[in-house]
Length: 582
Picture 1 (tube, rainbow, N blue to C red):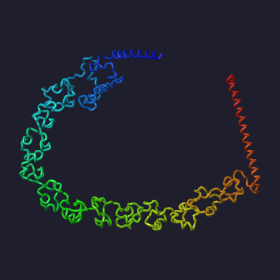
Picture 2 (cartoon, one colour):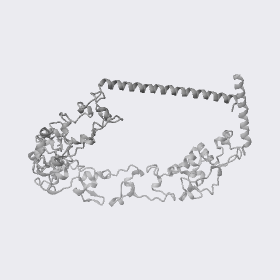
Picture 3 (cartoon, rainbow, N blue to C red):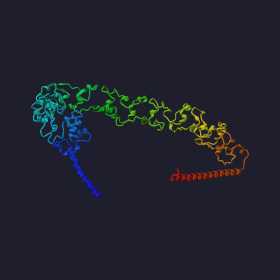
Picture 4 (tube, rainbow, N blue to C red):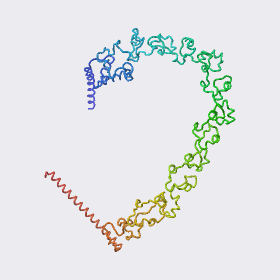
């Protein structure tokens, strides 16, 4: 059965495909051009169902070069007005031999391409075929001068291929070359020199621009090559004899102060001007060895000026990241800079120099400037409220530092009340309220305390209000930290319990805090006038429980019977519905 089904499906497809192709052929308005003939049966290549606007996009998908020009807005197609469809200029289905890319050459606007026709290119003698060869596309026409005019190049490639630098499209003979736009501007006597003097054999590329390349003989005659190849350092193009050498502007070493009086031969030994040392120590090493012994490095100009060695203009505040303040201004340089000034870079933290002076033994860190100033160690700006975890409030603000901080190791001081006020507590409470004094007291004064017992787990009601002023009536034993007093009545009133503990220690379930004789749960006070024996009380409680259990059992039986009756009545009701009784 499966084989027969498959055979029928294949047969239908074989019949349907030619029918579809035949249907497409019948619907076409005409044959497509030769280049599209292979896609004639695949209509979806050029047409999208129910979407005519998509046709131009499908054209661009096949003609990728044109599509790229449109996207980049280049070439003729890239400069066309937006929204113009391909079929307006290139209609198809006009037959195999239809020419869909023809256009009027005379009316064609070449300015809409990447190469606008100007000057000599507009003359009648210049034909389209001169640039657009028959076997190539219009877009493949060359756009560089040298591509077409390589034979016309009289420079034989010596000036490169960019003809437009000198020539214009108007005429080859019309050349406007500005030598000043090259790397070698013509000035002075160079203006009168003929081109062939420098550009031998019409070679314009890689022409030497160094003076010595042309004037080597003149240099050998005057300086014998000792002053190097840079003749322009001293001479100008006006003439060899005119020397305008400015040591301040033309060298990296301006002559200042006493250097102006020094003769050239003192620095330029044997008239060697190249690679003359500019470092102070190269000339003044003996002076440095005598004064600093080489510890302050070779940069003498950091501290000294050219006027005189003794005049020191070094500003430590501006030229370093460590301004000298307070007592640091009076300290000698060698007190801090004991080693090499540049190799041994000093640390800027206080502790690197004053570790021996640190009485805090490193507890307060390395930032001594947080509390101390450069004026003196004794002057401090420590704010206990902002710079510590223990702000000084109330009476603590009047206490001397030594009262809490017995030693400069300040972090050893404890922050709990008991550590300082153990003696005060021993005189009054004897630790019956624990060691957390802040529960009742505050820093204003010991006598000013704001403790509210009603905010604890045990409110003072009834007779408890009367003994509220006598805290020690309940708090009799010393505590470690927090006060942990029991809240059950029986813990304090076990001797007052007339029930001998038979009802537990939670007396408040039956009794009120106002009076023992006032009993909850409907129990009258007359029952307690005459004490019943313990055995009778127990028997009565057991009898009450039995009666209660019996009532519960009877209620369960009655409920069960009721549910059975409702089920029976429901079944009868259902039978009557089935019989059609209603």
